[in-house]
Image 1: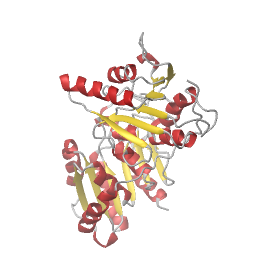
Image 2: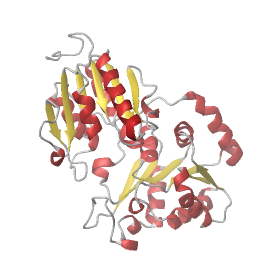
Image 3: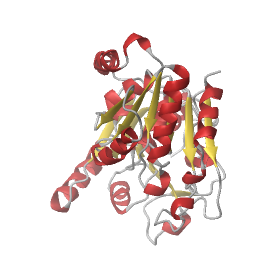
Image 4: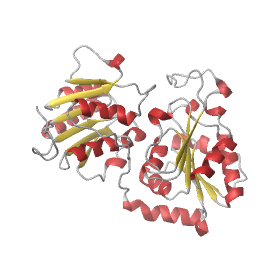
Length: 352
């Protein structure tokens, strides 16, 4: 299949993207979608993502979201078959596999797409893989940002890329009123809000909760504002640990909030502070002033790219970036080397 030599030269493309990972990974699809739509404004894009991560793509014009269930056993197989059939019906011109898993291979093999490609670690290649084109990426060491590395696959498949890093997506307006009600109740008189996200997929990707507490106290003392501490239901203990380290006045927990409410509240924050995770990328996409805390992952690969007022704090150690299979550094791990004073100085810098 030959792609048009310039936008609009032929009929609109039907393109599939497979990125069945986490919320932050889905937000990082937005620059690729922008590249595709810049090349072909009439393109029809079908994005395959995990259930619970679709929010950022649901209101982007020209994008249809297909969710892959995480159910096990027979239901898992049926769901994968159904999704492959759904893609086949869309008569894809291009299908990009940005996951490289057993399920994504199956979907690609049965999609009927005219051209297929994948971006993944070279060590993940297998005999008989279904892709026509394979673009090697190194999402641990880079050196390029993940969005640029995935963009390399677009280029190899005939779609020119310009290096777009903008991640902005349309929020769901239905969450505006609930967010305003929450803020009006907990932060009256429009006080400045420090939004804290102490979570992370691994403990060694998290800044210690007592330091989040001290940062919140420092913020409230210096600004007269309040702090909001967010986490999933499984991070309840972590959020409560942050709250227990404060005097309790002016700091509010947000536990298990739907992504839409989380998004709406982050958009209304004065500044966001958190580690490499989905909420950090929400703040970046919303152009909220932010400070990202990095250690086990490289900010050059996974860091914020869109907010005009953004800072990262990163003290590289010998094992950075790590393989995320465990940590032997204990209290000397990479995130623990970041001081409260340093983070607050970065907060002040993004708010100047």
